Length: 243
Ligand SMILES: Nc1ncnc2c1ncn2[C@@H]1O[C@H](COP(=O)(O)OP(=O)(O)OP(=O)(O)O)[C@@H](O)[C@H]1O
Ligand SMILES: [Mg+2]
Image 1 (cartoon, rainbow, N blue to C red):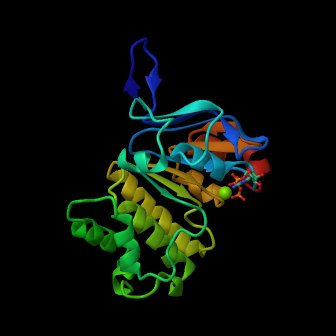
Image 2 (cartoon, rainbow, N blue to C red):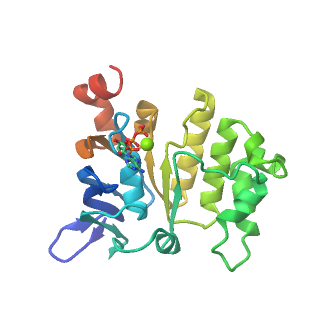
């Protein structure tokens, strides 16, 4: 937590009272999502709740009618996505998050397009995190399994050496074993000081690794707490975690 005058505190990253949509009715209705430096925050909720929309709003892909987004004490609400990348954000969207006709290595190189310095050491770090990607570096990403593609998308995001990683359903369509492995790698990355905000369909498992959890319903905060608090909440369990 960052101390600010007046005794209140501002989280490292916060989308505050976000309201807006895609031009029609509002999809986000005053939703607030915050995460502290080096911590993991998880957004869960039913299909169509606005989870992906909230992520897009934090990344600047959505014009908010009301509310603001703050990073490291700075109001970044008016910045374009590429300007937010320059501020340290990386976003892995829910779908079409790899270039299927490019090789694994080309995908990683694409992630580094903004960098003017030598990105080879970062690529080696990504390969150390995901050894299978090094083995398959000359293969087209489209030929990989779902779990391996998620690793490519994750790795590509890491190529900018982000301070904030936004992951929309990083374990979509993978087996339970691969899901556990991906969550372990997310924990590894957070331990290096990277702030992680992710949306997850595998709510129970994701909340187990979450410092903070948000249950979103119809674009508004329904429940907020530590991952452990939400996992212990009977109403959250019965309604959103299948008992
Ligand atoms: N590009 C778009 N243009 C217009 N409406 C959209 C667009 N993307 C999403 N929506 C609408 O916004 C609402 C919230 O969608 P969103 O994708 O944010 O939900 P979600 O919680 O991520 O759902 P899921 O769990 O299926 O990924 C839905 O009603 C959806 O139809
Ligand atoms: Mg979504």
